[in-house]
Amino acid sequence: MPDLPDAQIELLRLLVATGGSTPSLAATELKVAQSTISNLIRTMSADGLVQRVSSPTDGRVVVLVASAEARDLLARYDRASAAMLRDSLAKLPPVDRRALEGALPALRRLLGVLSD
Image: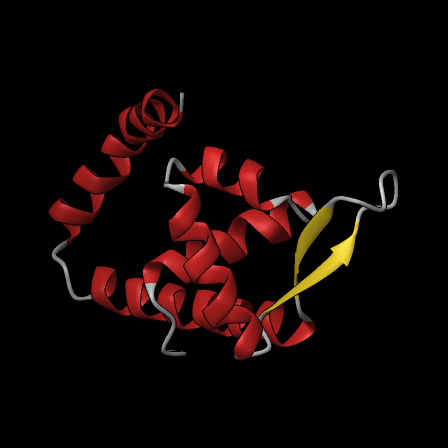
């Protein structure tokens, strides 16, 4: 899998899902300090993963967007993660796979509660 820290993956997921975000909105959405976002942006910009562009509605505002390279890395990460999960699930006995399938609705509801 591509070697990306979890914090970078979370920021990239946000930027891809929203089409871009200001640093302050990203900090709020990810529930982290502004300084954390600033550090991530600095590192990820240097690595070519995040680009700063002017807002189309207000030239004074900077919007962060995921670079094409970042979107490619994220897609590779997702494919590798999905393959690893499929392989791991295949090694479980059928009773355990059925138990996990039965738990999915409750886990989705839990995710919704945690996201609020």
